[in-house]
Image: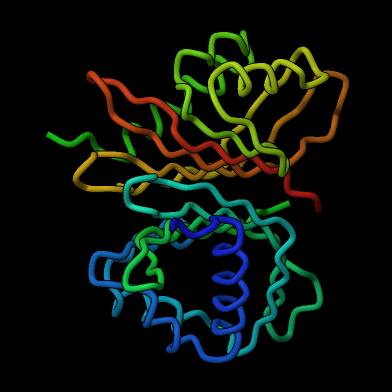
Length: 125
Length: 125
């Protein structure tokens, strides 16, 4: 039975942003060597490069607030899922939230999912 | 030879937003009966429903400005492409731009591409 995309999207993003805030190294488990991250226009491929990029971000503490969450099946044969997030983030030492958009494609594997595509952009006002 | 995702993304979005501004009915050609549009959280499936939704939007004239454009292969075997856009739009009669995010997945077919996934959100500041 195919997983419900919206339920997977909610569970995944709840976990992802909590893990990002708590311990960015713990995100390694959802990436693979063929995973791709485009972060503010720079491209990173593979678990090590992706986690190194996320750990290199200057702030040590950050809060995320998801404002919208959309999900669609991205390939009915594979059971993969496209997830689109818009939200706010507040790095430590900042008092004004920054708006961001993030898109993931999740691939099912062994009852769970891993991230093949990850595209992150701040939305400047 | 697989198409370069960034070149496809640029050509597609140049065409898409110009066609949207000029004649929304002309967008029908890039959707199929299994295409999906999530527009501000409401879901529409198939060419007719998607184009009807786009044509139902109240404004008759609109300008788009793409601020960021990212692209990744979404399935190397298929040659499909994930495109993430952030930008501004200005409907007629408004003088303040609205920020938006839009994600597409394009599927190759006969030397061109069609839209399987389309997710649109305004980003409220």
